[in-house]
Image 1 (tube, helix red, strand yellow):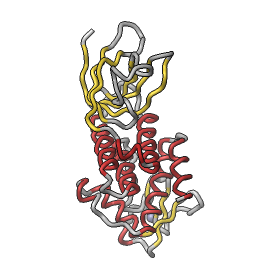
Image 2 (cartoon, rainbow, N blue to C red):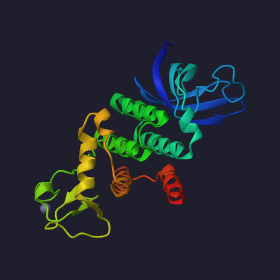
Image 3 (tube, rainbow, N blue to C red):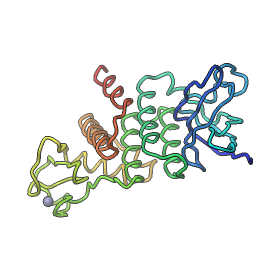
Image 4 (tube, protein in one colour):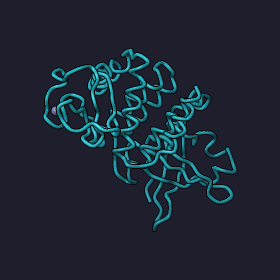
Length: 256
Ligand SMILES: [Zn+2]
């Protein structure tokens, strides 16, 4: 069987038997795969610390005949997540992003753009130059778009009236309609999320501007809270999953 070589981010790692690990990798060339890393649990010699969660690595693996897990033959570190590992908030954000990807993406489907996005945000999270919550908004907006759930922030999701023609400064975001709704349309209920016009425009900027410009934007504390609440709520609604890491992230933010 031929070997495959690709860059990958480590999404998950669980012990398997006395000495092995099953590692779930999000690869640049082959989508999500789970592979067996022989001896990774017992001996540090073969893989060292390279299979740590959120690491960017180069891996070599081979398929086995039949239905067994592929063999992970080599893993070389490209970017170990040193700062992420030492900071509980960064660890929580990275866990949330990787859980979103792990739960939504099926094994074997190729998602090169999503791999690039994840690798980029983990790198920026580790270099600590960008506010963590802004980075998380950026990731969620882009990931939603890649999955076909881009939130509509430009026109009323019912009558298509442009945002600039909406009355007042407070807007409603309907998860069911997938975007903002003007005051004349629909019955607003407690499932809708209230947000300011300013936050809406900031989210639009993040979703449309090139990444270096999008991440240079300054958010007020209130906008950051609104944008975070909107995107996290919308992700849970769209992907219809329970994200354990998001519950943890919300808990530690409350205690901050
Ligand atoms: Zn309307």
